[in-house]
Length: 456
Length: 77
Image (cartoon, rainbow over all chains, first blue to last red; front, top):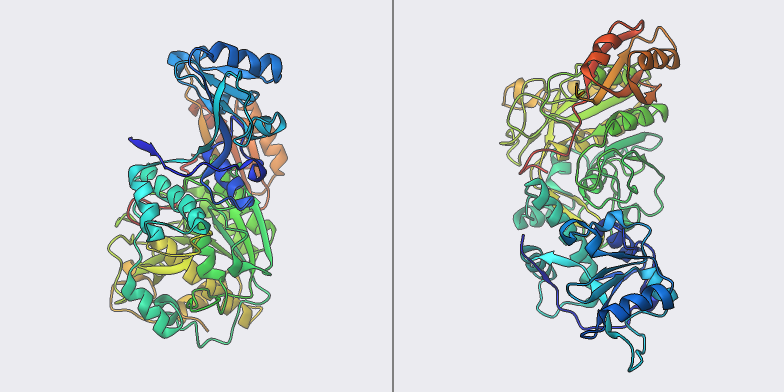
């Protein structure tokens, strides 16, 4: 994969350096750290020391002897293919072939080896520069396109970080995120709510999900997203990464199910159960995949917390799994309802939605026809799942996505509204209520179940 | 002979304490990863031979390979 270094004017960034910039830090950790410190410079937090010609050995020696650093040498790795994640105890890594040393942020700052350092004329070091994130061409182009200008506002650079991360993740899994559809955006603006919420009769509902706990088991949540400020949020991770969502799928799903009644500015309403207590369980990592038994651990957590609605926009094209069926039954036994995406393979419903104890959701488009990708067979209900506008992590904040993943939180949100209407509407009775009140559609039940979910 | 270890999920009947079932699973050759008390499941790591033994443990109703999950296939995120 070709890559290029994004050209930026060098600037002293020592003051903005912070955590997450160790030699072994992953790109995700450094992006998180950049977000935390409000850094808009593309700086990873680490530094690159370039040695003068013929001065590499002296420079190497000064790192260890003069500055007391623990130094890893690229020559110690097979074919000098350095794996930084295995150099966790190193303060710096030297690359003799190119006469450069990569220095961790903390180590550099503690020793005054940052970009603002005044180098002595007899120093072995020619210059010290901030290390910047490096993006694939297409990503860099997308960043600039997203920014929409040839001279982007520096304050917008973090948008590039997350957009780039999103694009990298998409590249890695070969998936496509639906591009924003301006006609749907205009429609939503005109209606004051997304087409999905309008189709589900959410705006006229007097219910808010108050008193209901909604668990969303996904890639986490942007915990600092302004649309969720002041909300009751309980979170947990089961994948060994912070709950903070670097994928965007989880933030989008939580936005639809539990987003605000009135987002700031001209942003249309996109959230349903705006007073529900949010339980954000990170069971999928920032690449969108489960880790070991993370999904089951999240299910267990949601049941332990007695979340009346448990939304799962995840799955695999697998036959019915007894353990998912058992988990769904445990939920029902406790008066809770597990809701899952049918899947996007235009094939029979996948797991866990195919379990008889788990409420399966198909996706429909703006014409209320089954989405081309939506799975079929064991379907309980359908919901909007094409060009769905909702929240995504900062600084982008909002975006469109398509999938049964997007249909599922429409059902979860409506389920929370129904659950609020009566304490008896729990588990199996809530299951039945959702189906009984669904709007009949012309497509067969194997494609859309009982019809389109409706708010009370 | 090389063994093919993988992740499994053990479903239980609820008739026995999960900790007791887990002890028996260890005897079957499994490495127990997590006990999910609320949903009656145990995640374990081991080979097919251990799975076969575990299916005979009292209180075990199923032993299946963990299929995992993700956000969905291409074009539908």
